Amino acid sequence: MSAKITSIGLKGLEGYRVQVEAQVKEGIESFIIVGLPDASVKESRERVSAALYSMGFPIVDLKVVINLSPAEVKKNGPLFDLAIAIGVLKSGGFLKQEKIPSDAGFIGALSLDGTILPVEGMIAAILAAKHLGLRKLFLPFDSTIPRIDINDLELIYVQNLQDVLDLLGGRQPLPFIQPISTFEEQRVVERDFNQIIGHEFAKRALEIAASGEHFVLMDGPPGCGKSLLAETFPSILPPLSKEAQLEKISLYQLACAPYDSLTMPPYRHPHHSASAVSIIGGGTNPKPGEVSLAHRGVLFLDELGEFSKKTLDMLRQPLENEKVTISRVHSTVTYPAKFIFIAAMNSCPCGYLGSNRNYCTCSVKQINTYRNRVSGPILDRIDILLSLRPVNLHDHSFQGIESSESVRRRVQDARERQYQRYGKEICNASVPFEQLIDKYPLTREQQDKLQSLSIAQGYSNRVQIKIIRLARTIADMRGEKAITNEALAEALSLRQIDRGNMIPPDPQQIVSEF
Image (tube, rainbow, N blue to C red; front, side):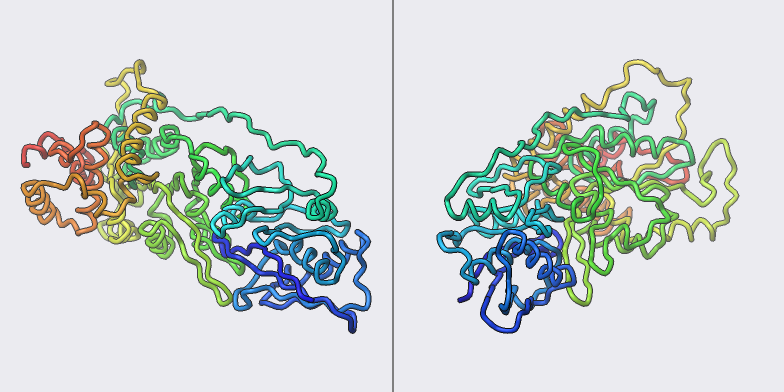
């Protein structure tokens, strides 16, 4: 007699149904697992055999065959231990009165004494169970993950194999398990906008970037405030939604990486010596890289010109598609990579090109080689280009500087307008362009003028679309339904930067051309 038990497999962050088919019959004692198992899955036979022996169900003089379906997909990890053990007990006739619901799934690793242990990717498996239509999911208790309440999916936490058998047999309910803490996390801001003196144009640009999730590149001489602005940027971002929190924890679990906060957007700041694999993701068993760990948050690349050209060009796919696909011989996995990209670099190798106080010692060839590391396709994918210069402290007051809290409230309001317009949690930088201009398209006059200005500046079609997206965000920040000439002018001012002078253009001069 064969038994079929439902479990869940993972390909990256995507889950799929795995049917664990167990057949126990008399014969030469053996335990075989088929269905493209990796080493950790093959070792399940030892863990399951020892756990069943400890529970009083020795497998003696029996041939056990386990098939993991679909057979053509490689299975990874100890996620299937619990399902295999239940299948062996059911097929071997050890379970008489226990009934296994057809809409129930089982995940968890087994220790030798029958204890059920947490595994990597549990949250991803829970989300997959919901999409697969399961109504119950048996899984190990893990106090390190937040409380998850999902409609139409009952999460049944178990501590050992005997608990599962008792539940399936309708016997004594589980003992009380300490609930997962649900305390309200306090927002801790280490860097605040009121610590930044001057740079009003740059702070306005960062507020626009936060409101619409646009990408930013800053350049300027050393010490002018590029890194400080980038490190302060997360303080004006709204807290993560429940769905975003689950996605964040899932990725950090798969990468075996710690995280500081549950509700704060992630902030990743890899060094320029980091390898392409560590940034994009990969390995023999592909793991999430920095671009995925920054999902729903910020990826900051300081000294962008010091990163290898190969690494920067590999950023094209995640910047454009908000996901990264890693292909290996045995499997192909896709991880989400929806982040706000912030980059900073000097104007030249020595850093003093355009400076009023230091003399640049770089040759033209050195400057061009340095800038060419950031290719045209990468620059095309960046919405806002900022050139900064040092602030004269004598010309600015240290009092009355706006805090991150007030800026964050405006960012939240602008995002709420976008969510309401599009009917889901998506911002202007990511929404399909057809949907962006569906209700409030540009006027014919605005289109013609934008086209002529773009031709004069040599902007590609992608850059023109990004200017429209920026203008839509600026209009949302102002509470305007349609994209106005003023919004388009300010969007254009965020692209027209003279690196030599490092002086941002005046939007009023641009708006007069419309």
